[in-house]
Amino acid sequence: MIDATTLVSTTSTGQPVAMREAWGQGLVDLAHQYFDLLVLDGDLANSTRADIFAAAYPDRFLEMGIAEQNMIGVAAGLATVGYVPWISTFAAFLAKRALDQIRVVVAQPGLNVKLCGSYSGILTSKTGKTHQAVQDLAVFRSMPGVVTIAPADAVELRGAMAAMMEMTEPVYLRLTRDPSPTIFPPDHHFQIGRAVLLRGGRDIGLIGTGVQTVRVLEAAELLRAEGVDAAVLHLPTLKPLDLGAIVQVAAQTGAIVTAEDHSVLGGLGSAVAETLAEHRPTPMRRIGWRDTYGESGPNDALLEKYGLTPGHIAAAARELLQALR
Amino acid sequence: MTIRAEREIVSQSAEDKRSISELTALSAEARQLIVRAVHRAGAGHLGGPFSATDLLISLYFDVLRIDPNQPDWPQRDRFILSKGHSSIALYAVLAMRGFFPIEELDTFDQIDSRLQGHPDMTKLPGLDMSTGSLGQGLSPGVGMALGARLRNLGFRTWVMLGDGEIQEGQVWEAAFTAARYELDNLIAILDFNGLPQFGWPQAGGFTRERPIDDPAAKFRAFGWHVVECDGHDHPSIRAAFDQAMVHSGQPTLVLAHTVKGKGVSFMEGDFNWHAKVPTDAELQQALSELNGTASRPNPEA
Ligand SMILES: Cc1ncc(C[n+]2csc(CCOP(=O)(O)OP(=O)(O)O)c2C)c(N)n1
Image (cartoon, rainbow over all chains, first blue to last red):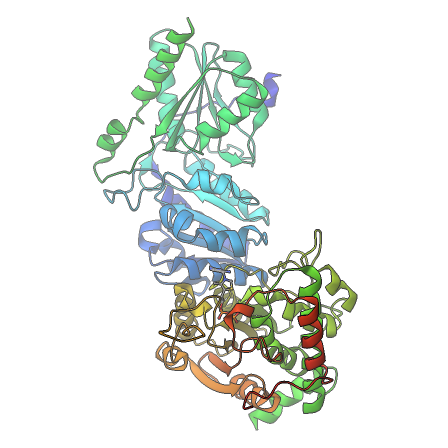
């Protein structure tokens, strides 16, 4: 049963890498191989780091200006002619400003547009409520036809980008701004729809997605020091969802805590709760953004105030285990 | 000289060149198919489809380089019905042009039909884009025109907009971008019938006020070339399309002056017929006006 989910050893000592830089460089690398790859930018290339691509491939970089709804439509039109447009803008604007456009001309027709939402979550360089994106996973997970990926680090991101070019479906790719530790070994093989067991454990299962998984690993360390043996499951794709892996870790531990830099409504926590409610009811806690609006501030202060630190995850685990005694 | 070259391409691909009287007859036939389909379905729109009918007939029978036997021919001209609620007009014209059997119009708006209330490109061959949420069609048109240029393909992209629709901001994002990229292989047609679904209040008037004034000036201000025509007069339509096709360095707007509900006396110019289903008696009256067996009431009388 355990083989359904492969155990991948992590090296959280890896050098912090900014995912956006890995993304910009990743586009350049893919463009060598895929001549139909284009990048469309909403006047944010020097934030999203699509500028790395623009410098390498000026003819395949199409500036679309501050007009996200139009940018999505243009991408759809280009896709009908066989191009593979990658979108460069912030997750907040993609998932909300251009949402109807994505639904009508990308998702329903199933056009091959790669929707890349940079600056996702709450760590958006002191920009605050308008730029923080904590509903993007909920939005795209509930939109038929859109594969939804949230990589944990630069290595997994590169694997995801390669996989995205191999598929013709529209994909939402969740990206973050700031440097974050690399947890996967360089030879890690990313697979769409496959969860990754980062750590085995008997007492409780911690489930993360995106870069929040790095904080989940730290939480598992905190718990270990207290004698709690926590399993860590990473879900890099929220759609398709690896139901088997979720049920399995619940079956083996009997208690689950989810953690995401995203709202607890509709994202990872919801996906796991829905899965377990139907297949294996299991006591749970969800760590994530509560039903409120954000604010600007330093990263550490934001994580602390809004309850997303490893300490918060460990505390939720402790409280759940206590309640189950 | 350029004009002649363009015409040669057109006559090569259109089945054969159509006379004005043929086009006029085709328009009347299309309107009959449309009103029958809406009556049968018990749903759908009439005002917008009727105002667009002559423009669509001209495009599909006289102008577009298309092949009904090869709907996904990579070199084909593209057409996007951005005012997707007028789908039944496009379906009627596509059927008449041989994309699918005329009888399939009976399935309009029925379960499992390829003829969806609003165009679905995943279902019906011959549709170049899915539409229905207004304001969205011009942007994919920009993408197709850009793609044609990048791929060195000679096709043109045509997009039909409604004048109510161009209240949507995205239309202007797309207009700006098309001009910025100097997309002279992109032609938008504005079905300027002056009436959207409900319109703006007009003091004391029976009808409602039109949504937007002087769209020509607005498109020009956004960097477009504009040509105007009578959207119900085939020579006028064809002359405007010809001008649009030879203009270079800018996208062109064909501003077609039209009448909502055109062709049926009691529907013309009445916003209530935007999406109303005719009764059996109204259907008969409409059909006899359209096939010329009943004379229309004289508006002057
Ligand atoms: C975004 C959006 N808002 C509203 C509607 C509902 N709607 C359908 S048709 C219509 C009026 C359209 O008017 P116009 O563009 O002038 O078209 P026409 O008169 O040619 O039918 C409205 C409001 C819609 N389909 N999409």
